[in-house]
Length: 474
Length: 110
Image (cartoon, rainbow over the protein chains, first blue to last red):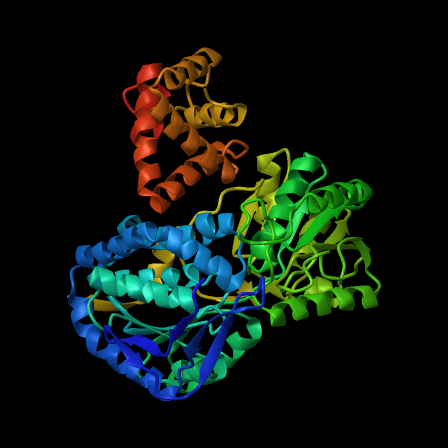
């Protein structure tokens, strides 16, 4: 990889030099070597981007829906054309194994844009109630603050929906993974999206994110990230009474019912716990098993985890690459040490770096058993390959243990009976539940309950998040 | 020739686009039809089926498989084209004019 130096932001359809001298180093977490340097946006940069987005809003809102959708489709096609360039970039930037980076990291980015054409068909932009004509209008300028774990998809999910709704956008991409965001900006520039419709900058949350949240000319902030940052954003946005959509963290339960094919259930569960190295808000990081089956499950879990290849993310055989940064590695290792100190029992893994991988931000995939509800490793989001095994007595107890969390983002149920699993799934207070490994649906509503935030993304629900209703009585 | 994984994915594919006709004879006919194609086309279908396996296609429910086909079609225009061709081949082989997803409920019931 060549080193990228990017001291400009994509604002008003042009590459505009940053105001300040703040510089951020982008590092390959697998090797610790520098990948590039970008400028960190300040409040003046954010203001420029908002001015551009506000100026572009009236014309974009008036652009026919088909034309707006056409731009989304064009972005999807161009992303697809650049797949072989984007996937390794993301692998270098945040450590996702190359297969996952190709199929999911970039794949989802393409899907977010390509599926807009279908999703808009499911949105009612205009309908009648009694004597009222209800017209759903674009809400205005969207401030999108996005995380590092899916550096392309998290942006395209918000930008595609906003564009379809007729909104213009200011994106503050994560300072950990800005290179993929700027590549998206080049795609947007290449396909000729009108100037100011999408503006992309990067910088630190307390500076650029705060500026977006407080800005009086932004109509909605759509944030994906931690619950802690979500609270700060909601508080900063409150004085301007702007809308806020928060897609936050999770500590998601995965219930294996007593009639399940245990091998299949464990293989699926480990895959969903360690997806993207566990750096996924919907990772199913609490595996709930009947108490009587715990020894068998532990043995199966150990076998599956031992079979996972941890290492060079550019190797197609690698299942788990490094954490996205050394700081994230340290955070995950701290949690593993906390688990040991709390008295949990290691089934597999531990705080030491995997053999031969001491240099990069690698963590051993880890599973704890003999845990209790008060342990931090059971209650807090770790955002790494750390799974806890919890036990339950019967289906009702499984639901109780599953819902015993401050979070409510995702869940899973595995059973030989889809009907039984679905009945349990209905009892979970989480925004998404997969039954027997049901496929991810990029058009289904995505968001959470409780500390996992509010608002929904993806598909028609994501578009509707950026619309406001006007009732015209006649 | 398709390998075992690809054959399993082809069976799952046929069951997905034609859920009412999963009989063994139809499956064998579909497999034979694919394996009778010119080498380059057979190879392309093989790659497509192998790609589906990455998403756990074969082990998924019919609903999830249909979703995987939709999702992968959005992600890749080449895959989308491949699915259209493969579905046409499956339908032609089994004697249906179109897949279940494109038929009205009363047609599927027939």
